[in-house]
Length: 289
Image (cartoon, helix red, strand yellow):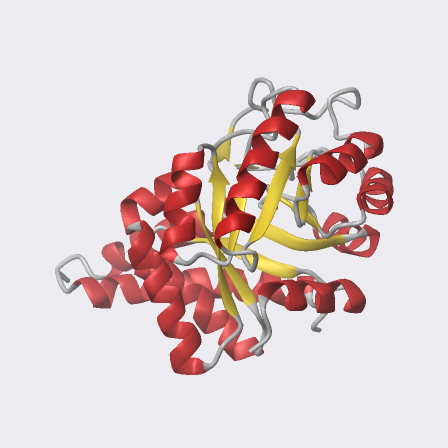
């Protein structure tokens, strides 16, 4: 089976993006995989530090590995928004395919210093694990938003600069970078998120020379997604949309079946709700009509 870097390179060459979807439990994982299997596409499963704590770092790694082996499927696991070397080590030991080390709130100098330490550690243990760095702060939670979070990089002066991306990659040795290009974590309830800076993505891609990851995908317009992929985005993160679909589907199931107490009968509706959202996103990212 191809490794994750090979899958990313194929996406780059084909001008499509790999869907990265976060999970907190098995129902979410099942819904995401069902969509990928139906469309015959690779996927990346993401788990933040909080999601890992709830699911279990080793348990989610074993679950993804089990799907990969049982179905011979290109499904990969990313330790999303990892903020300490201790948590990096946990993910490495559990067998993750990729790790995002998030020092985006720090100064460029401190970000480079800490990210370089993480890259050197991971390379010394398992060079096959991809390391992603983050440049710029885009918020810390995949939630429904009422306003733009404080300290989020959306002003032009706060967005990732191409020359910073070049320096960051050169000095840290990361495999991937997640820039701040107007994207934010979370989504607004009744409106699309702010537009993203497509021209900046192009310049960062040219300057950095590595695949780019778009975080905070929930709430971005379809047209921005397509333009971002053409500009150089190879992986797109979706989380809030999945969480909303999971809850809304479960609430409907509870309302329609007020006497039901069998968990799998209720959760199966959440699985289907998640799957529908993921399927729509995968079709868009892969230009499937």
